[in-house]
Image (cartoon, rainbow, N blue to C red; front, side, top):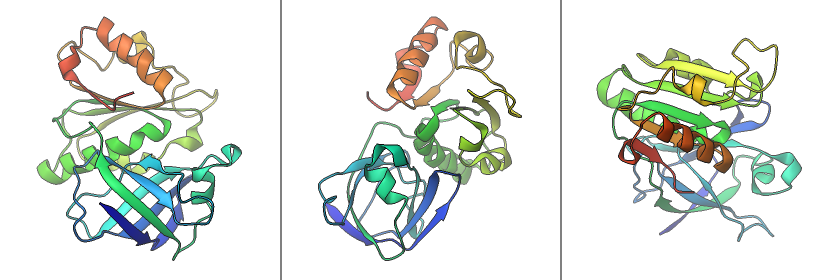
Length: 221
């Protein structure tokens, strides 16, 4: 089923990431972690749908997204960064394989954080704490870290931020075996989402660390 939604509000979160707020349409149900296909109802862009994940919970009155804009790509996300209240989109779905399977190690790269936001918010809403869960979040620069203060304030959640740049207040590290072994045990439940090269590399590391396939919650590549 398709829903046409006018943009209610748009707010910058970082230098290239935006928080989009819509009223949640009646009849649209989804599981936290699932995504939708979003089309801009703008001449020349209607057929260029892209997948994005709501960060709000299904019982909340709004449908909200955190979307990273890539101006150099001259594509949908560049146009999203230019949106104004009243602009309309079409969404279809939901779809996706990431859902709440309980506490675990949440490993995300860049914009792959958005399904994690939804699942972490659900767990916090359900249990009042994220005790037993760790977020490992990799970005290019410190200014790219989406929702940093919110993650750090989530009750019980341990956070580990790493970046590619030198001189940041967080470690300059890659998500290699040495680093991930600090957080991952063979019986850990691991949530994984990010750019395909990162996901493939981390998947290999998790296998080397003894994590079974059944313990990995990830979006299909």
